[in-house]
Image 1: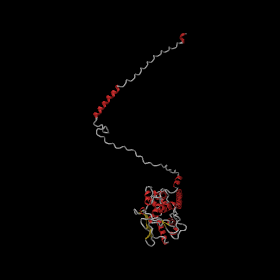
Image 2: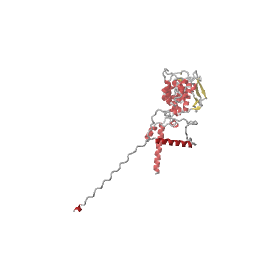
Image 3: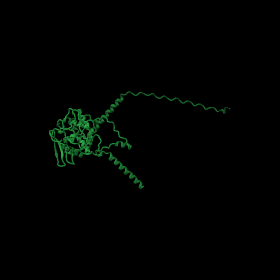
Image 4: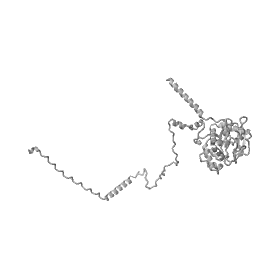
Length: 376
């Protein structure tokens, strides 16, 4: 008996080890520094406030698609007017603010795979994202391509190995979005196997720049941006400037898009990919959601208006109206009996039913037959 249990426990341990090994092999690994630099190359030189909005909005890719389509369908709405028009569409505020930057939204929508990867990195590796941004800015500064100018002001925080680059608009009320070639901006690209992402030329842009910065028109949208960065080596994070609190991802606006890392799926309570197939294998029928029907407002049963108090002398009755009315009730009863007697006296007599016919007399009984023996 003991040997049998040892065999069972040994088999269970082997199966558990195999499952853990398989899970570790199939779960995606965190993005490497090379992959993060590849992803962040086209936006790392954005002003801090705009960069934080892009990263927050990237965690909600489906809402980015909706916002980009809305922006394309409403080209006449700009800046504050555009943001005001989408406030009731249910998007996250970071996505709403980007409708003031239609070119940025168009690029995020055109390269949706890049957008989703950027959002996954922001959800699971925010500190690594911050390190990548500072690494790229340091390389751009070393190449002589990150300097203050009419569109932006570049400053540094810290010293020695802890230098953090901060980018802000030259005029606080005007934001300029730079477009550049990452292979030029950061000097010699260090990762030949991980070529950087780059913005695709949009209609009306012409050819993509091979060197230098291309600046669009300044946008007076400072009041619409509420994100920023707290730069601190090893402890950098995106903060909400209105509350000075650290940003937190809202899974409601994720709209069911799968999280890349199992830790994120567990944190935001999303089932892992393939869970439905495993449930079906175990004999559980998949749950089919009921068909969606247009929702109508709830029907509230009509309420009767409150009953007013009866005026003096009215015939209104209530539960206590018979108190102290005994004599009146008696007189009314007698008057009713008299009226009933009058009605009965004037009624015609009921028709007489005919008397029943008498029964016929009984017939005489037949005489008994004679005895044959007597005649002999």
